[in-house]
Length: 456
Image (cartoon, rainbow, N blue to C red):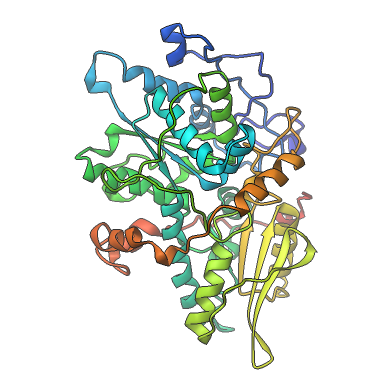
């Protein structure tokens, strides 16, 4: 199946509400069951267009289409309602993990500080019957730390014979899907093998947390709250570690907009609650983020690490310089008058296409690129930063950017919990288990040059 720009028909890849009045679902919500005021309306089926769909060209099989159609609030309520039945054998521990780029949306939507928005969201989810609410920042810690090590290794190994650079980030599922299904080799050889934060969070919840709670992975239903629709597709494509016994790391992905719709139709006067951690009864005392303008911050953290590890240079402030546009920026490190590190951030498919064309021609001078499919970065994910008519909500995006910028930055190396997990869960920083759990491989399809002729 192709998007409407290829076939002039709808793509059935993902679901997005386009008609709030036309509702269709089978499973009743908890509020409907209890006959409460402000009952939950069922979410509409949706139409997907190229502005949302980032992995074009026959990107979804019929089987994947069926599975994606199940990634909606109906599936979430199905589990909530099963947990209320007498048959305890069908009960599941319901865990929700929230991406940090979703919190500014809830803060702006409900006119709250980001900390209050986090507590309001957590309290609301628990009022529905969710058992644990986690923040995925700790999973991004692992993704960044593993990416740092891989970049340094690639930099040292790079030569004309063995071209390991530029290293392209792998945290954005829309971009990775496009690289695998449309570009193929040799582009996929440049993708960082570190798993995305969502994939790492799946292993943390279904392996580490499950062991701590003496649960099998199948007894946990794990929901991700994310800013974009491609996270739904990513949940289907995870390479599963043996420890998960075939259970997916993420059972369901809901966008921030889908959750906000549920909250608006429910009771927002519920009691606020602190976000849980993976470590016993500890709670998250404050919201933190990584050093990225609207992303998980791979570029800034890897740049600092590489500067210190490769050239013994301490970089405190990472200075960005816009090149073609505000979504294509450069960061460089000079030593003795020579540029020794040249990093870039390429957001949006027009910039990605230009990057790929130059890379194919051997005229791309960068060592590392943080690639994100959404123009404006993760905050501008189509699952949250849209007007009712489906266009990008620029005013809302500016508000979210300001909120996100005010969140305190925490470097992944500073997390004592991450270091403990490397030892207790992964049997060491560079252990075979760490490699198995935290890294992935990519499909290697050979594609023709026409794949680069798509106009975005």
